[in-house]
Length: 425
Image (cartoon, rainbow, N blue to C red; front, side, top):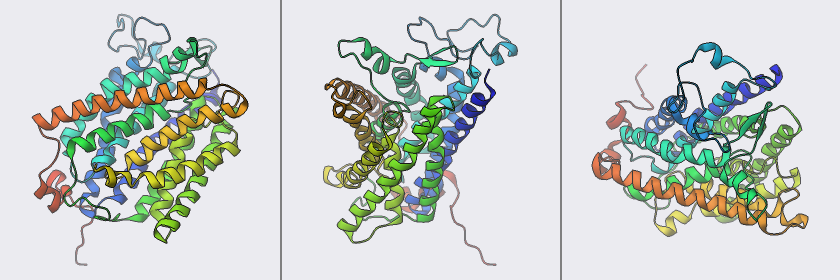
């Protein structure tokens, strides 16, 4: 066992877990003051729920092993012979492995958590917490865990991750000859969450008084703090996906620095041209858009092409967030405009600029074709099932709070708390 690599994997897992509290601050600052507790609790609820489900059966569903007939996740999980389970077997490190298998289990758990939490931004100000938790459990089980299998179902051989799920490994065995490039989860995380967010926004409908400029972020410093924590954690998200402290991890790290930096600048330029003023919320949103786009591409682009991707996605997402007003869906915190659109841009960009297989390197359109197959397969699957789950919950136990409760303030109604309590000294 390589203790350096083991430390690297465990440290990056902790960095990715920090992203979900960072997301809570990012989303919490964007909503109304009387919705901040509700918004942040949806992220913290995801941490508690998905971490438990991941250990119980999520990892076993997502990582079945290429060609395996049965689950082989954590011992004792459904589908596994539990006759000889003991603690020594759980902590044992296979011969030649660079790190303990449980370190990878922990790392991937944090991906599942942040993916579910991302969805919540689309239904800010109007969702019941209990129903959100039920939706999260069902969606994670029937959407995220299977999609993670499509993308991340690597085989651990002699300490190295090989093969992958059907859109990464399976497509490479077809006449197209290449698989989807998704190093850290542009499809499984961002397109997946963005498509589900769009579905829930349609199910729950518009907030009371929905219109452009109806609300302003109540706490931009929270937004900047959250974006900073997200960016910090994202180095673990992307570089950590190499599960080795090597040159590829270093490339992913530098691209995770420059792509969001370029996107931040591009977003501010668009704001200046459109609205006359660059804003702090725009800077934070631009950085997040760049982080989303570089996620699938961080190990397949030179830093120069990563900067170009950042500029492109900064412009596209800055314009895309207004689509909800033109198309009439209320994606409260622009999960669709940033994560779905940004994820699609980053994933499809690889068809042109992926090192060696992109068209600018003289390759054919095969890489672009498989990138599109992977991206749109995940998008359609996630949207369809999220809509069905959300609609069923709304029609049975109810998903949306009453309009009068939304106006009064969801924090007091749902949680009995206020984000800011002012008292006389």
